[in-house]
Length: 115
Image (cartoon, rainbow, N blue to C red; front, side):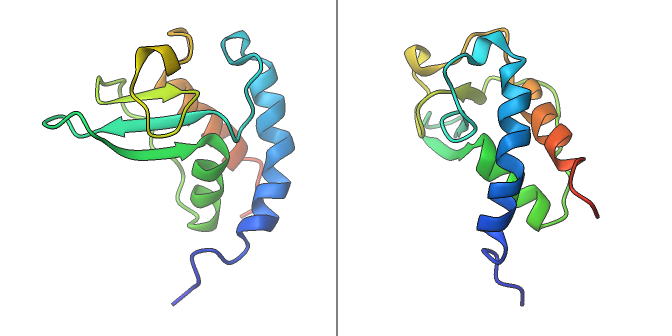
């Protein structure tokens, strides 16, 4: 069984400049970094945050697992935030940047990594 953290730091270091470049093109993300932009999801029944990942972490995991990101339709149980494990409106990034945009950015960075 492969160590799930094997190569994490190397991939993170290699992907960071690409993600920063992609983020610089999004005015809604001004002042944020791939390590301070989070996709958070809640349990629809309890409202408790059950998943929280940075843009960097989500991208690195996709690369390590060689599993391209899936970007389905926007839904009310996930959002993009500036704080981990939060679903508070005051921590939500500008509504012009959606979860689909988040996963599209992951896909763009994923596509730069040789197979």
